[in-house]
Structure formats: C-alpha cells, structure tokens
Length: 170
Image (cartoon, rainbow, N blue to C red; front, side, top):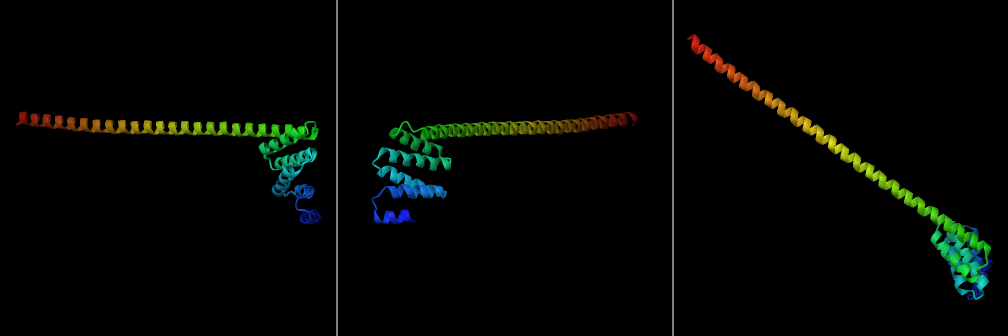
C-alpha cells in the first residue's frame, strides 16, 4: 500500500513500480507482477535496475511455465548485465524446461500418431473380417441355392423317370 501511495505522489517514479511488482510476485499475482516488472524495465535508466526488472519478469514467467517468455526476459537482463550468474542459471533452467516440454509434446504427438495408426489398422482389420464374413455368407447362400437347384433338377429327373416308368408300365 505504501508503494502505491508513493506512486500516487510521484507517478513517474520507477522504483515504486518495481517494488509493487515484487510485492505482487510475492503474493503470486503473477500477471500483475509481470505488468509492473515490464513497465519498470522500460522506465529504468540504470542498466542494473533495468536488468533486475527483466530478471524478475523472467522469474514471473517461469513460475507460470511460460518458458519462451522467461527466456526472452532473461536474455534482455543478460544484455544489460552479462556477468549476472543468477540470471544465467535461470536462463539455462528455463531453456532446459522448454526443451523437456517440447520433447514431451513430441512424444505425445508420436504416441497419438501411433494410436491413430493402430486404430486405423484395427478398423481395416475389422472391415476385412466383415468382408470375409460377408463373402462366406454369400458363398453359403450360393451353395444352398445350388443345392436347392440341384434338388429340384433331381426331382424333375425323378419325376420324368417316374413318368417314363409309368408309361412303360401302361
């Protein structure tokens, strides 16, 4: 609250902006912290102060697992103060986490692709099995029809023979 009062008295003062960002970060209000850190980084004239603002901006992005944004902020801080070991460490960590995230996404995509391929093959096999069943059913139907037709032909032959036999007997 005292930072906000200070900011009300001196609207162009940068330190209160930065301090409000620190306060918001401590309260886990990360989006608000990012806004204050970003504003203070733009307004600070001293490169060390500016670098601290970018460093903390990177930290707030990192807390939200926004790795690309945190990497950009850390790089901005290192442009200003290249020897800052904390920022170098955080940058390396953010890069590692981004790489792991991308690998996980790639693995998930490969798993999904394999699952889709497996599903497609299963559907293909199901269709082939259905086609085979349909073919067998059709063959059975044709065999039954052939047997029926043969039975009728045999009946006709027997009938004709009976008629011929009766004709001979008469």
